[in-house]
Image (tube, rainbow, N blue to C red; front, side):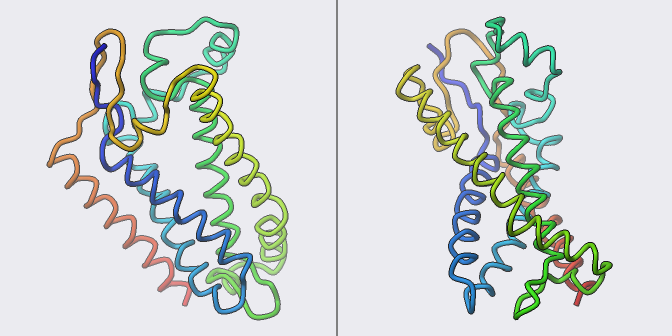
Length: 220
C-alpha cells in the first residue's frame, strides 16, 4: 500500500466550508425572520465557493480537476457493469463524479434562484428588482419548492453512499477528505499540494469573492 495525496488542501477546505454553509442555509431558511440576514450572507459565501470550485476544476490538483473524473456516459455504464479501471479507486469514480457534479449544479441552481427570489413579505434577493416579474415568480418557486428538495435528496444520497462504502465495502471516504491522503495499491499520480498551489487557490478565491461583491454592488 502506498500513501497518495489525492485531495489538495484547497479542495478539502472547499468541501467542508460548503458543508457548513449548506447546513447553515437550511437552518437559517427554516428559522426565517432575522436569521435571513445570515441566510443571504451564507448564500453569497456558497456562490463564491462554487465559482472557486469551477476554477479549481481546471487549475487545481490532479484529482480535483474535472478532466480526472468527468467521463463519458459509456464509461459510466461500463463502470456500472463492472468494468472498472485502477484509477477509479483514487479520486471520484464515475458514479461518484455524477454525484459531485449533480450536487455542484443543483447548489448553484439553488443559489441562483435565491438571488432572484421574493417572498413578497419581507425578503427579496438582490437580483429580484433587476429581472422580469415572471423570472422572479419562477425563481421563487424553484428556490422554495423544487431545487431545495432535489438538493436535499442529493445530499442524503451522497451521505448514504459514503455510509455504504464505509460499512459494506470497508472504505473510509471521509478520512481522505480530512487528511488529503489515501492508501492505495499501486503507484498513482499525486495531486499538487504545495505552498505555491495554495497561494494560487487563495488568489482564485479572492477573485471569486470580488466577482460576487461586484455583482451585489451592481444589484444594489
